[in-house]
Structures are given as C-alpha cells and as structure tokens.
Length: 398
Ligand code: ADP
Image (cartoon, rainbow, N blue to C red; front, side, top):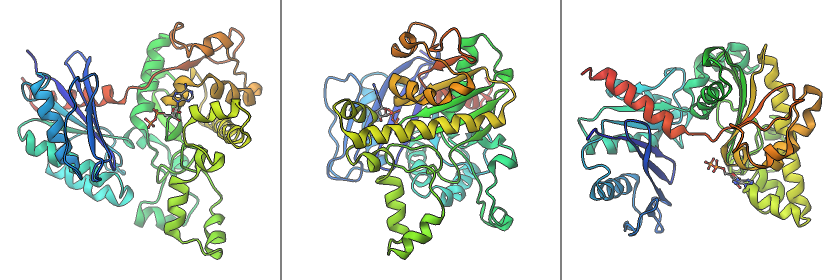
C-alpha cells in the first residue's frame, strides 16, 4: 500500500487535518477547535467515537491526538509520503511552494512580522509534525505565493518609497491557493489551456478576496499588506478611508482598539448588528430585518465595484468565477452583485444560478451573457496535497 499525504492547516485557535491518497482522493478530514482554551475539542469527520482532549490543549497536543486516532483507524498506518502545510505569509521570499528545510523555516519566521497572528502558529504546526515524523519531507504552501506575479503598479501603495524598501510595505494578497485552483479548474471546465486562460476569481467565505488572473498568472487582487483590505467580509471591514485612523484617534479610539474593531467587529457583523454569517443574514433580511438587508447590499455593491476594477488588469475575460461558502451557495449574492454590472454584460440564468451550477459544469450565465460565469467549489487542501507530493518526490528521486 502506498503511503498517503497529510495536509495540515493551523489557524490561531484551530487546526484542520486532511489525508489524501496518491490519486488525490480525500480519505478523511479532522478538525480541532478552541485550542488553548478550556473548551478545546477535536473531531474526525464521520467518526463513531469522540476523541478526548485535555482542557487547554495546544496545537501540538491536538495534532498528536488526531494522528494517533488516525493511526488507530488505519488511515495513517504508515508514515505519510509527504506533509503539506498551509502557511499564510511568504513575503517576497516565496513565489511558490517550498520544501521545509532549516533555511525555509527560518525564512518563514522572518516573514512573521507581516503576519504575527498566523505565521507563528503555522510554524508551531510544522515543528510538531517534524518532531512526529522527522524523516518525512514537509512542504509549505503559501497564501501569498500565487500573487507574487503582481506588477508594481498593482502591488505598490502610493506611499513614500522607503516604506516599501525598508519595511516591505506593499500589497501581498492572500487566498492565493484558492485563486490558483479556480483558474486551473475554470480552464479545465471551459476546455481551455490554463496558461492562456484569463479569469476574475471571487473567493467569498468568512474572509473575502477577488483576483484578476491573466493568462494563468495573478495580476491584481483585493487584499493587501494584510487580509483586511478590499471586500466586505464576515467581521472585517475591507477598504476604509485611511483618514479614519486620525479621526478616531481624536475620539480616543486607540490603534489597538481600532485593529480589533476593523478585524472582528466590522463587515457583515458590524453592519447588521446581528451576525457575520451570510446565510443567517439572508434569512433575517427575508423576514424584514433592515440592517441585515443593508449589510448584504453593501457587501454586493463593494464586490461589484471590485469586479469592475479587476477589468483594468485584463485584455480578455474567459470567466467570472465564484467560490467560498458564500460564492458557492448564495444565488442571491451572485444575482444581486451582477445586477450592478449590466453595463459590462454579465447575465445570469436564474435556474442555473439557483442550482449553484451543479448540473451545468459550474456554468450559471445565460445565453446572452457577454462572459461565462462559473461556480467552482474551492479545494485548497487538494492543491496543498499535490504540491507536497510533487516537491517531496523531487527531493527524494526514486
Ligand atoms: P471560511 O472562510 O471560514 O472557510 P466558508 O468558505 O465556509 O468560510 O464560508 C462561510 C460563509 O458562507 C458564511 O457566511 C456562511 O453563511 C456562507 N454560506 C454558506 N452557505 C450559504 C448559503 N446557502 N447561503 C448564503 N451563505 C452561505
């Protein structure tokens, strides 16, 4: 039996695991949440028996518990062939996935200043799997890497250039693995060659971002130095006037407070006063809750403006693609967004849109639409598994 591939995604208080076989079939997924709190718990999808975890369990404790449980179930009976880690920030150092040797790990540590909440936990996950599996090749796949092809006109802020030179202040973009997946999957579904396919990809989950991908390469994206810029998100504001900081400082709001508000109390949650969850807001709006209706309206209008903005980076458009929990499931959000863009010629087929493109190879546009519109369920774990195996095999030629 050939060894499987383990995919690890460490968030600030959560950990997701997935195991793929060599044919890229997902065998199992598992989740640990509320880590480092009294309510820490783990769960393996479709498992019969619960797995116990001590209160306050760390990422490493949860990882060990999950791996032991998977070993018992025969899924990781032998060491994996490769381990792929999602790493949030690769700065300008990483333009693609990287085999995790000591130098690469040190370089990820150097990028931590740009993602202080994320890279350290990603490194903790890497350290834990290196201890558990010292002889298995480990690979990092970065959220930022796919966007390293942005031209300076798209990645530079109009700030004193020393900020970029001395402090690496620039737009990096995130969700790169998902945007990459959408571009390849769109090309496949449309029968095109990835290297000559141009799309606008909208990843709409709890975090939201949009990218212009020209001939298979990312040329613009809505997130910036941090994942706060751009679209309205579940709890993040997206774009605001930078003058806000000064104005609110005058009202006694500190930088730390504003950071918290813009990241955790804004977006759909801030506008609706009810929820960061789009599905809940759609239900509330249906029952006449005006603030929820307004939150959806602001979300869709911002998204429509950004779809228009992405056009500036393209000379052709093969498809507009939606993904993420909202992009894949909300016919209402897609319809409401594109209702602002009639001038550009996007037209949806109401029935195909309603069925989320499930029976039409992802297509939801109508016959008179100027551009194809697709719904593509994203699969970042699959990309990480593929990249991990590819680099592992390169590092250990048979
Ligand atoms: P994450 O970014 O955490 O992976 P997801 O991609 O799962 O999140 O997206 C979560 C979002 O998708 C939530 O706002 C949720 O309400 C929304 N969502 C899921 N299903 C639907 C639906 N049927 N209609 C509207 N929104 C939905």
